[in-house]
Image 1 (cartoon, rainbow, N blue to C red):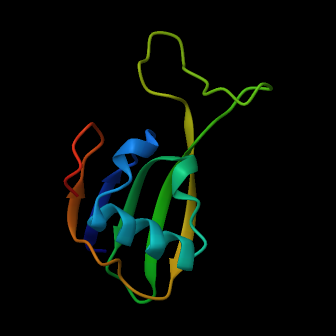
Image 2 (cartoon, rainbow, N blue to C red):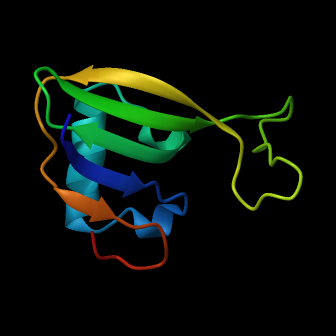
Length: 100
């Protein structure tokens, strides 16, 4: 298993506008991956390509659940089989940057 891409999912739509992040969103959409629901995503260069999305757990009101004492939401993993590798490789960080 070879890790190809790590994505810290951005949750502020203002940070989704960079061309590389738009390419990532398009790749996720084409592969049925609901990126906006995730916290992290890992893509592996395997045959077939595998993506693992850590999906945020939500309460009854649709709010993120935070375990006591944690600043990161509670998550569970969902695995997707993809038709190709994404157009980005390496690491995409969360934050205010518009860089990939």
